[in-house]
Length: 336
Image (tube, rainbow, N blue to C red; front, side, top):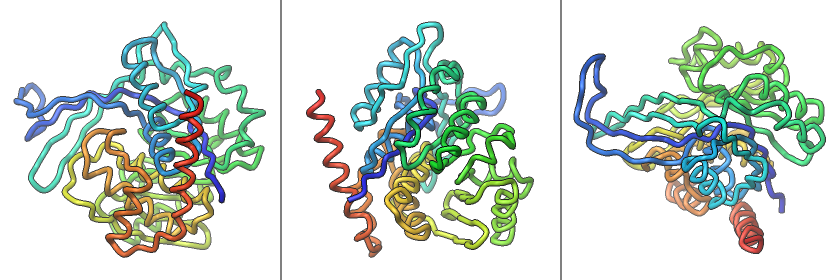
């Protein structure tokens, strides 16, 4: 039984979530209907999702030496993510995300402002150990909430050791050719795909063009998440569209993209083909959207497989992840 082994180098963010019936305009005040905090950050979300689906996950990152930092680490550890390489920095605060939700009867929209805090204090020295250690992993996942230099260094280590690299290209910042040349996968949403390529993927033809553009930039495999339309995948030989999976009323889209990436990478590391990996990831993200909060909304492998069965999807290829998850939990229980 193959146990996916994934390295996530990325961000940890405490989300401060405000819900209201409408977003305020400039200079306007509105009455909110709910407030809560939830651990998040693109890197941490992807790490937690992969771990809950049965992957053996190690996280590299940085938090402040404060109450949010403690809570962010605890959330990772509860999901059995190895936090050995998540460092505390007393000189800076932990990152926070100001999440605004506009709630309607049939859907929810979000706006997010991230104050990066300790995430931008990750240094080359913090990741230098990976030059020798990175070959232990089946996949490396990166995002753009940490310094570009760190992404370039880690992707370079992985590329030279033949380890696949997934870049979740969010939030958008210009991506260097150096980084693009080291990527195996890139996963923007439709807005980020437009920012990178200048092509908005609003129709099948434009989706194909955007994916081809990403391929010609040097990335072997391009994956674009399309919200309620699902996701598209393409490389030099293949183009796939995978529809969204209806898992109930959309409650909070925060972390849906992270959930998708964590699930897709877990499936690929298990040896699953692209079509089924997309379906698995869409189902996982669909469950996430139907629940509130970033990490609190990320489903376990049992939940995902249960929903897949409800939709008459074949789950045989994914059954081994149940045992992987059980073994990881037992290992962490013995270490406590």
